[in-house]
Image 1 (tube, rainbow, N blue to C red):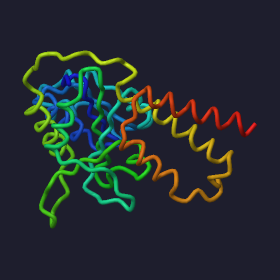
Image 2: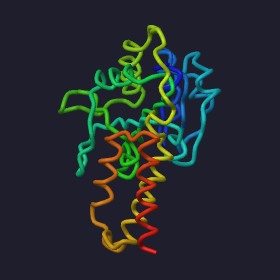
Image 3: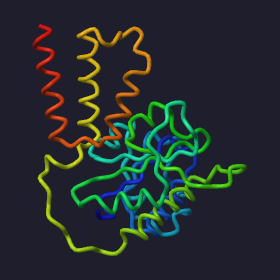
Image 4: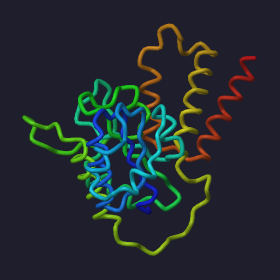
Length: 241
């Protein structure tokens, strides 16, 4: 996988200095695609000062209103989180993350998602991600500075991917992992179908959809698989009618 296919997504960042420091960390490690989701601060003089010359990362940043928009073209979305969740999510170490990216070809796009300085990512945002990455740290003082966390992951990735490798066989586009927007479309379709056939009570859905979401995101469905599953749902809907 090319470093150019990796984007750093920062959600709800409140301090411009953290955005600038993140841009510097990214530029150090050859990653240039920065996406800001609903930033709570301007990207101005303070951010550029902390970027220490990594102006290109800031100049070419994208800004999105919400996380689904930022990750819609990504076939792998990984959330950085130090917090254990009530519903466990598939988890990688930084080294395992780098190894996973190394196994993916250049047609894939990947997002590494970082949350707010004081509260991280919400459970709803985590549920949009395929996996989580946790940076090992002192359990008595495990809260990392946002830019430091980005630096650590970018370093692990650069150490693994920074040297060019010969291109391999280009796979069929439909056998590649489906982008996030297509997976989300399938999950919405699935929920509608389960409600229509009476399996899922829309008033009291419980944890069923969250568990199914975890299953499908962990599986990293291909576009072919999405098409098959949606075709099955459509056939079920026709039978219901």
